[in-house]
Length: 380
Image (cartoon, rainbow, N blue to C red; front, top):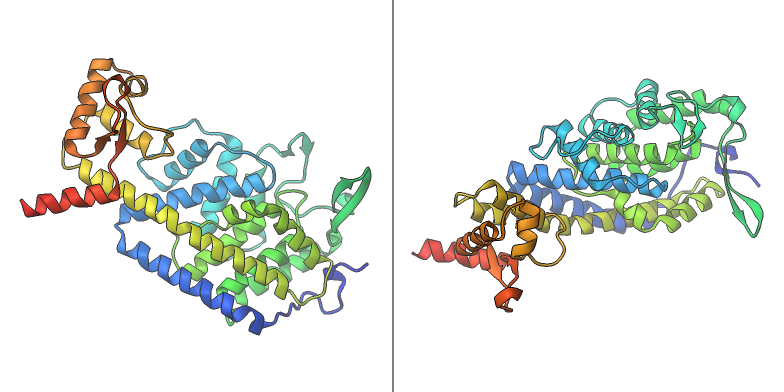
């Protein structure tokens, strides 16, 4: 059975634009709407949104490959490199720093050309020790003929099943030259479609011993940043791929065993991107809410303990706050915690829940409550 790169016309892909035009138009509409919303926010809100999305992108792209990274470590690494206030909260972790470097170079420096040397640097950053797990690998160079055949294999019912076999190593210079020349010179293609084609093309060439999936997704992000014309990232493709990981690999395998018509792959890619743009709305809402909370809080003089607690409650805090939790998190006495909480209630940032007495707990004010407080202040 022939792989797609063995087809006589490889790599001249084709697709049915009539089948894709509706979905492509919807993605473009979502993209324009999201970018418009972000432009209406302040610079700090844009930074916060981009930080959240980049963090998700790095964590989820690694999770697709089975590598679980610390969310806090990734966020800290990105924030530190971008000069955000949240940086420096975690000790540097070498395996985290590498993938962060790659993702930031792809998205922040999207206007720079992608060439052999840049890709080799990306690969070296992914494997700073020269090992993939316990296995030594060739780092920062294309795989060598000694690695052939490069196969993606799993065991099914006790037998090995070959999901994919990559082109021979001796073809890589030619294959990668064709790919990168197309990536940098093709100007007539819609950049969203270009991102989908680039993702599939690169991962099919499979030029490295390991890390090809993460680099394919970094290339997609570079193409999408070029499409958006901004280094800020407001949606995460890798997050959606990770949610549909099984189907992602099935789509790749089916296309790699198929013909040069990649309509089915592009349809899946556009659907995934549409879902990513839709999910970005929830991130935007969370950032907007956080901005409202701090806008209210900054009208008053907060101490370091109160700022710490507000930050904790705005970052995936489970349940409600009470005096005991506050005292533990802020490392203070119960009396001090109670005074801080009462002040936050007075400021309108905290709202007590219905249960009273020793069971009293507190939540953050809702957007509606914050808006009402603002209106009341304007009417006074």
